[in-house]
Image 1 (cartoon, rainbow, N blue to C red):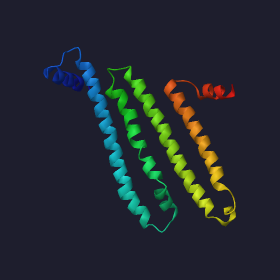
Image 2: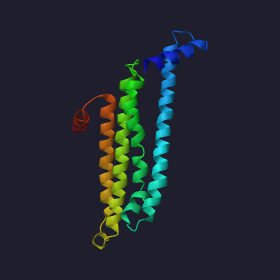
Image 3: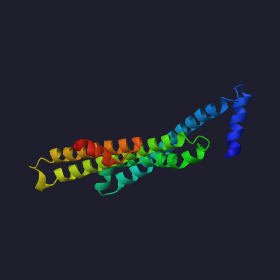
Image 4: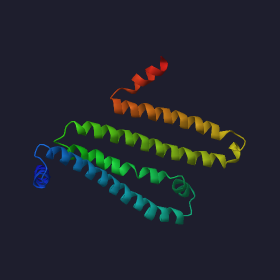
Length: 179
């Protein structure tokens, strides 16, 4: 990896950039490469899910798998693959830029929390849909109950994201609500 770093810097300097600016331009190029890699991994994962899984689940006689497709559970799960790959690649890719690694790692962790919330929200929609079709719950206000659960999940997600980004314990933010 070090030879790759030196090679990139040599290309940048040979292109006419000042040697003092070469590491920063290399950092910018690495961030662009990281963004392109994440988009590529998301695109590949989404194509696999939309192509292979979608066709497979639509052909099965079971109805529960169609609900997973209709409520975008797998589409939301597709966001996890690039985030996990970025989480793994970042320490290696930015080993010369120690100050960037925690920032990108925190952003990736916050993104993973949001994606997990989206998956849970999709599963809740499936559960709400399934219960609303049951004869036992036809006259019950299920939508209100599930909306309350979603609000609690959104607040929890917000607290967890702030906790990760600011490096504070979630208890710190919960104690602010108590005050």
